[in-house]
Each structure stands twice: as structure tokens, then as C-alpha cells.
Image (cartoon, rainbow, N blue to C red; front, side):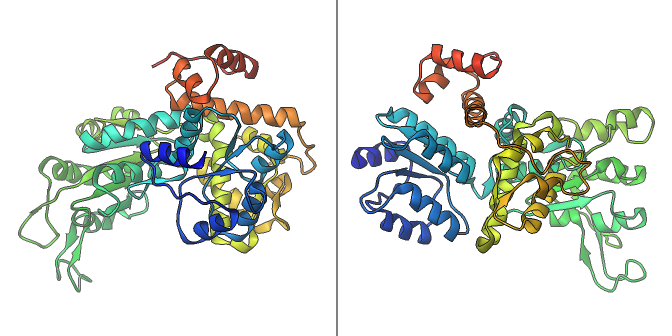
Length: 429
């Protein structure tokens, strides 16, 4: 069936390499980059699952594996899932289901124009991911709000990539970190001799952002006097250096971010009302991590894979026993805190398996026990199935018929699974 699958994937827009043995696949994966691997369990020269486990240990980065099998037991499938495999289908399977799974995995793993195109798997973050391309086509200014560490800069970078491309300049300015006495010089730049210490001319952040995006982080901390000057630049798209006699045209997209309530600051006279309405044309709120626990598991696996790519000789994998503890922790520092916790766990863990003690050994308020019992197999499989169904439903806009068709099941079966797993139906659209 290899020939027919190659033809189908090419019709779907994939570039496909067909490897007829495990040895050939290993050579290809060592020399080329792929966004998804569709592999049989039973290969002519060895077991496909064994090949996957070997490559996990040997290669710094491995694309998601989607296994096809008529021979593997559920225990073998769970073993591969725990080791890091993405998914599997059982023969005989519907080719549409296989293609839909491969597309989903390729989208989550791959990059679009050099930009990471997935911000998370929760419904809230998927809505933002789906909305940003439309905003990037039309909006010249974007306001992003959310708690510290929630991922505001990542959203800004994705907006930048989608609007002007990764190669265009992306200039980040932390308004809270620049002293008020230096902010004007930093933003506008200066000519040689403009003030004591200006031994040579310097381009300001506005000039540096020409043709790209200016990201003003923590704009709520910008002094009022500087806000008036910023408003003038936004209205005229012209900027002049300190000590200079001319002003030049600058073309840039503006993204502002803050964890503060700008509307309340306007009411209290701490933020200019005219600037507020100038940057508040399009507003994106990033919910804190505690409001989207589905993303915790996704981020943890992503950060562990980042560590594995950087340290291929010290590969780590997450103990399934710790997932519930990680998802129940409130993470007041949001994604930033979670990333640091994963880095610390990967560094301090004495072995490849990341247990709860690696995350909660110290400084985490004792939220987890190092001796957490292993969850029953049925419970673990149910959690995996719940995650898979939620991602599939979100990918198809909670359209029951389309989701069921993509999964190769009936609409009735999908309803029954959702009811059994406690997934509440939402409005289709």
C-alpha cells in the first residue's frame, strides 16, 4: 500500500520520501528534516517501534512518529506513546483518517515561514493562533495583555512573522527597564555631539524597526511625557534623532504589551487617553496558564524536547505519574516559570526519567509527592484519549460531523466518547 499512500499524500500537498526499510529510513532521518514520519510497525528488516526508540536516543531532534500496525498490542502502543511517539492507527484504517492525523502532527511540529505557528493546544490559545493571520494582514497596531510570563512576547513574534516575515527586524523595548532620562535617546536615537557622551551617532529603536515590528513591552510603565512623543510618531510615522535637524519617514508595525490595566490607568490619569485608544484598536488577552491546564502538558513536552535537542547525550522523558501534579500546580509565573522548572528538572535529574521529585523537590510549596503512584493503564489511556479528542474537536471548530469523519468514527460514537470522557460539547462553527 506504500505506493497509494505516497500518491495520496502528494495530492494533499506533502513532499514525500518513501523508505522501504528501517535502515533506509534511519539514513534519511539523519540527513534530512521532516515534519512527520508515517511508519509501519512491521518492517522488512526490523521492528519499526525499535527503530523509533533507537533514533530517540541517537538523534538530537526527531519529528513526530505516526505508526501503522495490525500486529501491535495496546501495551506496545502505550509503550511507544510513553516513549514519545505521537499517535498510531490500526489496520485496516481509513486513509482520510491517516492523512488528517499526519496533517495535524505536521502543523503542530512544523514551522510556517520560519515562525512557530502553534501557541498551545487549549481552546483559548488555538483561537488566538487562528485569529492572528487575519490580524497580521490588516492590523498595524496590536495590544497584548496578560500576566507576566504568560507568553505575550511569543504572540508578538508570531504576529510579526505573519505580517512582515521573520527576516524583517523585530525590535523589542522593555519600557520598564529603561530609565526615564534615557528613554528619549533610546527610542529616537541621537547625532554625534547631541549631548555630553554622544561621541558618535546612534540609531534609535524607531529607526531600527523600519520595515519590521516595534514591540513595546510593559508600555504601562512608559512616562507620560514620553507617551506624548510616542503618539506623535504613531500619527505621523516620522522620527528625528536628538540633535538632528530632519525627521525621516519610518514604516513599522507596532505591538504593545502590558500586565497592567490601562483603562484604569487612564481613569487615574496615569496613562494618556488618546494613546490608549490609538494602541487599543486590536486587543488580544493571553489567559494565565492556570486557566488553560491543557497547555501545561504540551509545554512540558515541548521544553523537554528542546533540552533533548541541545543535549542529545542526556535525553530526558517525562514520567506519566507527574503529569497530573504538574497540571494541578497553579504556576503563578506562568509559562516562564514552567520553562525554568523543566530546565531545572532536566539538569538535576540523575536519570533519563523525570519524576515528580525533579520538579517539586524544593521551592515549589510541596505541591507534589516524589512517590506518586503510577496511574492505572486505563486511566492513563483515558487521559490520552481525552487530550486527543479535545485537540481534534478544536482543530475542526467543534464541528461534530467533520471531527467524526476525520477520526474515522461515527458522530454517535464521538458523542458517546465525549460523554464518557466528560468533554462538554460547544457550539459548532
